[in-house]
Amino acid sequence: MGEDKALLKLAGKPLVLRAVQKLQLVCQEVNILGSRQELEIYAPLVRDLHEGCGPLGGMEAAFVHSSEDRSSTDWNLFMAVDMPFLPTRFLEGWVRTVTVQKSARLAMFIVDGRPQPALCLLHRDVAPYVCDAVARGEFKLLRVLESAAKDLALEQQTELEAVFLNSSLETEVFLDQGGSWMGWTPTEEQWATRHLWFANLNTPEDFAAAQALEGALE
Image 1: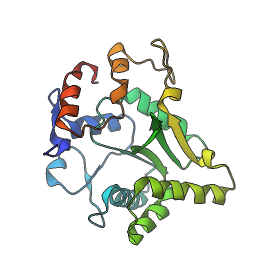
Image 2: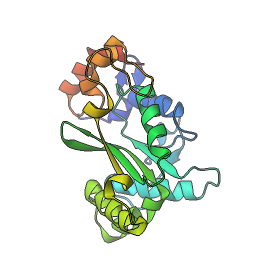
Image 3: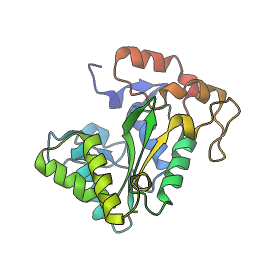
Image 4: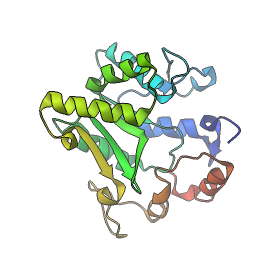
């Protein structure tokens, strides 16, 4: 993209502000993973404990931060900054569905056959696996999460599918225009942008396409 995506404006708002406002409607505490001081006006920063470790470094820092907060829940929700079209009601319903399942420890979506770890829910039981991976220099996010899920399934003596919830977008949202999910029905504008719900804005062309659909933003 050539510049920091977090501060790019879509319909007059920086992407980071859109992400924070969305998460504030779903989570009891919202933090920004990173060390860029200029982002601190949007939410408190949680800085990496080990630099240069990619997304896993941020997750490690988040787990340590939440473990120090006695009011924290058992779950951490991680979301990339550039998912502005993901509807809040959809996100809220998914979080609620996952967190009430007794055996669940990890959850993410699969879109068009591809896992989407940029949006994931991780239980505090996953923390040791993330911290160990960072210590070993293993930074492949999906591989680490899949390995953690297998170990946790063995520990619980339960099926992997009960521990690692992979939700298909096509399964979770009815593909007919009048469909609903968790009592929520997308607007016509939201439905028209469903292909962008999980699409990261990685190029100027992606961002230009998003600007053309600003009417679907919440």
